Length: 164
Image (cartoon, rainbow, N blue to C red; front, side):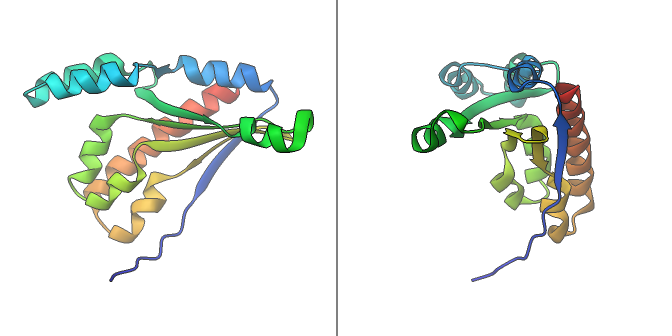
């Protein structure tokens, strides 16, 4: 049995805009392929170029797609009522970027798709993301780290734009 210690860096940006405005901006930058349609299209491909085409058609302007959304506040609301702050967890990603990282560090597959947390707090709407470069740093793989740093830059740009 092997254990690896991983220290995580969390990137957060705070918006003074209403939650629905922030989520609307965030969502408009993502592709939203229906999961069953997307995965059926992936399964029908027989070559990597065909797969790339399916993925690229599914991406939004940010270069990412949404895989799933959890509305954590729906659970909290039932426990605490109307004063419950809203909190949403989005699973987003780009399978082509995941492929580039997993080729070098198979454990990178544990972190794809990415989690984005958007939640209300007294000081504003927080958009948070655990940097991939920090998650992959213990593996000491320069090619994977380059892909992770590029990914982090894209995600941070997406979150910053949604917060404006």
